[in-house]
Image (tube, rainbow, N blue to C red; front, side, top):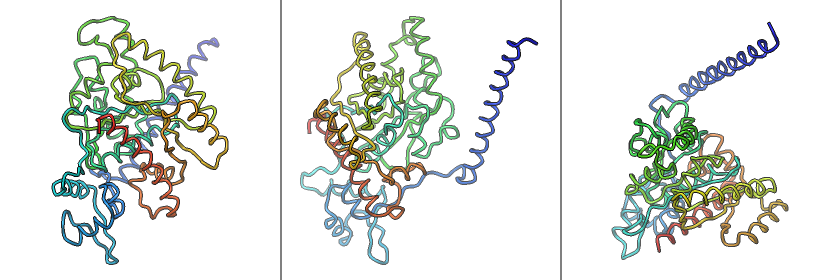
Length: 402
C-alpha cells in the first residue's frame, strides 16, 4: 500500500469520524431537549409590570393604574401586595381600548394608507458584532409597542430562531426556511405558508437553519447557466417578491443577515428600505467593517447597474457591546462619530451581564425576569436597549412621514 492510498484512507476515516460524532451529538441534544421540553411545549412569555406596560403603551403609570381601578380596559393581575401586571395579549387589548376612547391621539402605530412596508436589514461582515441580539430586541420592542412585525432569520446558524423557541435542527424541517420561498425549482412555496407565530403577540418569524446555504450554492449555478424566464430571474429580486406577497400583514420586517457578504445578504440589502450596520468599537472590528463597506459598495454598484433597487430610507451604524469605562472604545466611538456624523445612532448598546446571561438561556431582556439580576444591572441594560430601539422606531416613523 503506497503513501497516497494510506493518506486517502485517513481522510476517509476522518470524514466518517466527524459524521459519526455529529449524529451522536444530534441524538444527545434531541434526547436532552425532549427531557427538558415536551414535544408540544411552546415558549412562554412573562407578564409585564405596570410601569413596563405603561412605557410600551405610551402613557404614565398613574394613568394606567387609574384605568385598572376604574375597571376600564383589560384588568391586570394583582398580587396581595397590590402589584399590577399585564400579559402581552392584554397590552394589545389595552392599546385598542386607548385608541378607541382617545380624543384624536394615536395609540396603535400601524402604518396607514400610503406608508410603505419598512424592511430593515441588520448586517455586518464580522460575527459577534451583535446582529442577532439587535434584531431580536428590536423586533420584540416593535411588537410590544403595537407594530405588526415579521422577523426573518437569514443566518444558517439560526440563533434568532432559537431565541424565539424554534430549534433549527429539530423544529425546522426541509423547505420551512426562507429558502423555500426563494428557491429556483418547482418546490418553491408561498412565504405565508412558512411564517410562524412567536411567543410575542404581533411578532411572527421566518425561521432558519442550514438549508439556507442551498441558496448560496444554487445562485452561482443559475447565474452561470444564464437561463431566462422564471428560474433565471435576477437572484436579488426573489426575496423582495416573497416579502411583497405578505406586505399587507406587517408594518416592519427585520432581517438578521449572516456574517458574510453572500447572495443571502445581498438579497436582503436589495430588498431593504433601511440598513442597520452593527459594529463593536474595537480596532479589529472597525478594520473588518472597513473591508465590509468597501466590498458592499462595489457589489451594490454592480447590482444597481443590473437593475437592483438601492433606495434606502436610512442607513445607520449601531455601536454594540460598548463599555463606556473603556478608554480605547470611547476613542473609537468618537472617531466613528467624527467620520460618519449623524449616520451613527446617538445611543449605543452597552455591554451588559444581563444581556449575556439572558442569551445563555435563549432569552432577551424583554423575556427574563428582573429578579434574576441586581436591579441596577438589569435597569442599566434595559435603559440602553430601549434608547436604541426608540431611536430606530423614530427613524421608521419618519420614513412614513410622521
